[in-house]
Length: 295
Image 1 (cartoon, rainbow, N blue to C red):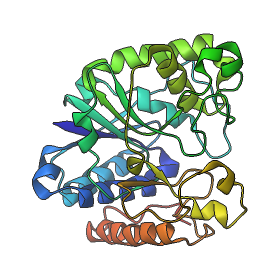
Image 2 (image 1 turned 180 degrees about the horizontal axis):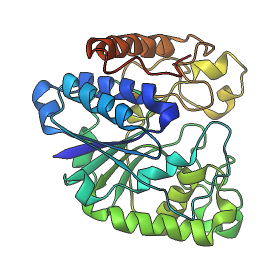
Image 3 (image 1 turned 90 degrees about the vertical axis):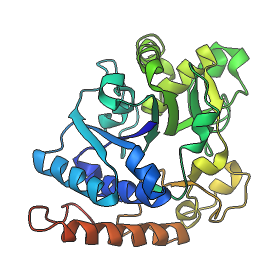
Image 4 (image 1 turned 120 degrees about the vertical axis):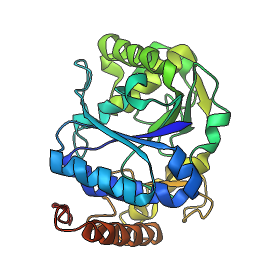
């Protein structure tokens, strides 16, 4: 049994609702009933929490919980262009809150297409399952972890992982959190991509990572191609929508729920799920007006 974990602040309420809808679509009815949905937030209101709970039940999940948490005091926000400190909440899930033996953490700027529970069978106790980052795949090559390869030459050339989708055994979460805190306190100069760099510093030190197939965290690159060709220099796969992707990740500042986001194939697919999600919200009645802030 497992729980999906999401971190949602007021800026990501609508995308979070879309993620819940897409997660439900990706599972059979029986799997939906057995899975749990757990949300951590900094600033959602009681009305927001009620909306999330009601949509979760409408989608077929039977177990829902939401809690307000604060991120690690040592959290370092080196990149704040479109990211808030709520990104560090992914390390605040606990066994008491999850009440499931496994956690599948999912970023809210994603489109779930397939069953994300399959990799749990490959992740051993003590490990974190993660997918190699498509834009910064290798330590010492891209901008991630500035100075780390110079300080620890034996890390150069090792994989660098994206934190948007993670798999873990619940009992290992306290140790992971302590490792992240240690990295934030003693290796702050190597953090550029916020919590993701902190996670990778811990993974490099411990080696406790289980690589997961790239299809489980496939970046949507069409938006970047419409603005320039730099992505062709860093992504080696064919630069088109991947029909086999179990999850499409909309990294970067342009998001598919924004009206000025380039309307690529994956963005159009996302907006179809968005429209259906908002119909669900309207069907829930006057107690849950359509979320504000959608552009």
